[in-house]
Image (cartoon, rainbow, N blue to C red):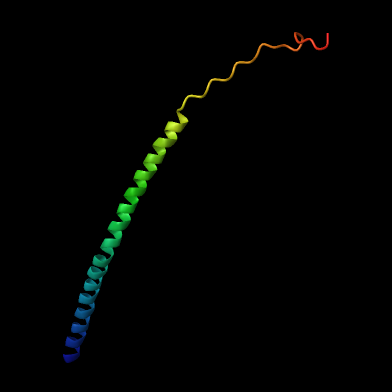
Length: 80
């Protein structure tokens, strides 16, 4: 009878310890998680801004080509 009481207290201690450990770990990592979430939000904003810049550069009009000169080789007289 006495040994069953000790085993019961041991199991109760293990159960309370596991619950307390889980609560403490989640409380300590909460600040790190919020920091990482804010960093992800910043990276998403930068990605969207860069995407807009790429689309602006892709949609620019091409420059007009230069006109060719109307000079033909037959019309140039050399040495006559």
